[in-house]
Length: 114
Image 1: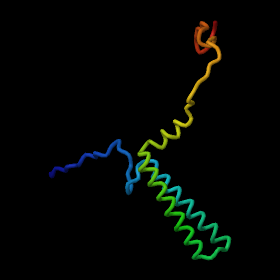
Image 2: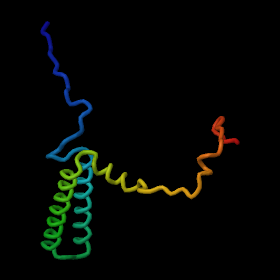
Image 3: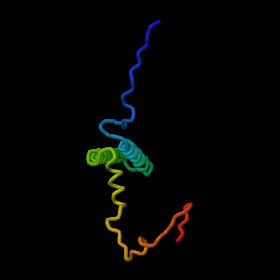
Image 4: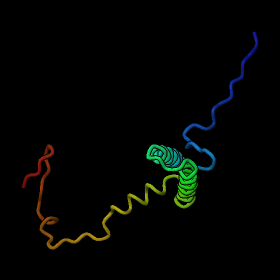
């Protein structure tokens, strides 16, 4: 009986990479291409010249893919999500009195009592 050797998958817990795009940017590129296809279909259905529809679709596809690659290069794999999250963090928290912090509050079973 011959022995079978199986190689170990060394790519476990690594992010998906496709043509230099990592993780979420693959989805963004796919969504952009889907929107370009919808735009082409709408222009064609409206009755715009076929060559003009094709020219607009190719230009939009090129611009959107370039934008996705630029975002990927600028922010990295998780940087864009972190940038969006950092916009929601307030820069300053104002408190007009210390009453909220100085009162003795006992929390029991999820209910606050004094």
